[in-house]
Length: 314
Image (cartoon, rainbow, N blue to C red; front, side):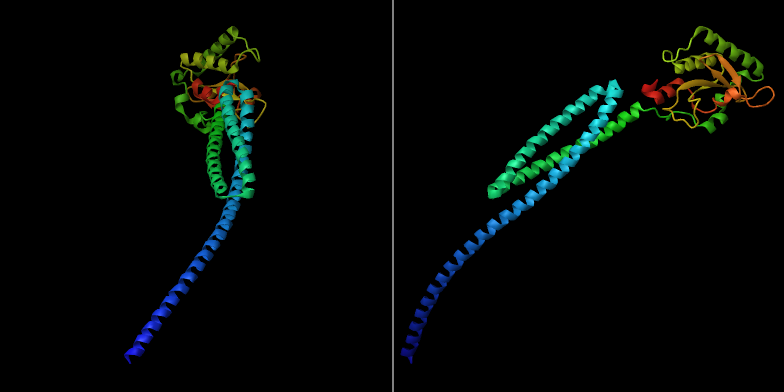
């Protein structure tokens, strides 16, 4: 019985050795197989990465191209502003130089990109790394271009606001007729005397000033008369408008005159270029046809408000 057990143990030991040998061989074979499979998978992954990166680069290239087109459009608009307003030319020149520097950098990046595309046809892991760096660089440039594009939008809007007339400081018409601070209270119960004084001041100014269209400025003449009337406690507002239009914008306005107010807030029209003073109603109570073309316009309490709105147009 013990002999049989010894034979069985010897037999089991031999079988265990054989089994271990076979397992070792199988393990080595599997190891090589796994290595081969991993190598194949690595090449496939590299090509997939190249495809993805190339697609990403193309998208970024399209985005950069679109942003560059937007920048070119903004520069064209900026150039137009520079021609019309010489005082902004220095800023526009600086913007153009900055934009050209950005375009030069972009051209360099695109040249590098072309090199990497060619290299990717026989891609290796090194080329993949280079493409990743290229993508990162392009993304940085896209961010810079977007920032510059936004800055140009803001700057153009600011210059347009600065250079374009806008009635931001004009009085609201309904408020003017009810604003008693604009009435000449010092002339209460002296309306006839007020009218005589007003006509005298207007004629005095006309006798010492000549209006030459294109040479002298009706805005300045209106301001002069506004000041002369104020010195005599006669309140008035400066009005700018276009007597040949209705519903004109401030940019379409081409003339300036005054609305003087008596102690009761009634309007008296004053034409600074001719020294004329006239009223809305004739002695018979009918509408004065001369006053009709003076009824519309943008009204200003003081000269500084008018200057703020007319800007470069004064």
